Length: 348
Image 1 (cartoon, rainbow, N blue to C red):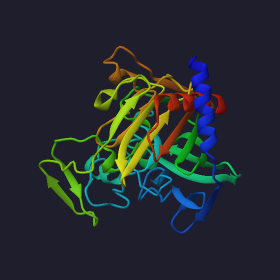
Image 2: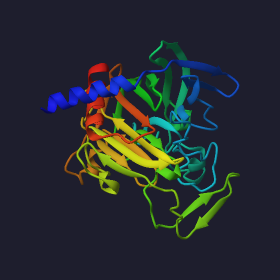
Image 3: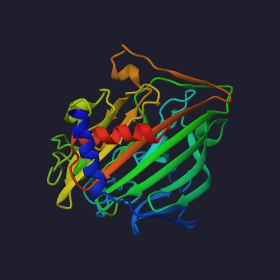
Image 4: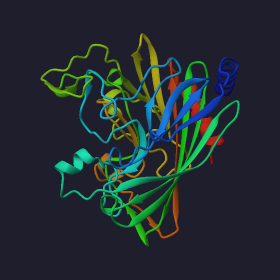
């Protein structure tokens, strides 16, 4: 009976969801490649350089209806946003401890206040290819992870394939990243901050009564003793049925963030892949807008019961595969389970 229900659900999804065309628009001056789906702007592969960002990101990210789901700060500040964690920009992949260097907290603003902290930089190298068809578009980029704030040794080479697709009410991004050791030995120490993440708009945070710092549209910071939760509607639910702030440190095959923006439902779901390290992964999903999955941070998430340091010898590789769905509607558990199953079959 369950198989019949799942099959009928899949038929229903297929009958109403027709993929739209994907196209790319290169902008060398602003160092970005815009992604358009159905002729509408979706996101940009943004690589402004290490003086602005010490990694390439997808930023901003919009839903099919044009709602911006990512936080603007610090690139394009918007009124009412938090001003914490300036390294949380758009959608990205990096890690807190690689051979003792921090590639997660790799922001110029943080470096100024943490001179003794050992940072790394991820340099965008090249766009290897971009191609589109009537159902999807693919962008392949390379990068190099360099220690000592980008002035030291080359540690990892990165090859990332982005696959973009969308319908009238959804947008989907697959990120498949292969990291290959350049150094003789590369150790990803088991730590909290990593690895694939999105920083979301204020409206998609979980309502909170804690004091914080906000910014206006000009980037001016204001300390607010009690948060205004007007329009803040976010909530998490995992594939295992865990909800809210309790999802942090739990394991799941997918995680869905629900909320309301521009007077309609928004769902943002991230899917883990069976071929990934530590599947199903631990989730570093916070109520203040950080939505991350960390397959290597077992120690802190399990209170020391599980440790998962990852080591690569020179020439060895590891691949991380994640799918993100942005929907202008609510998604049921059965629909998300089906998408998880599709992701597992479509991506190797």
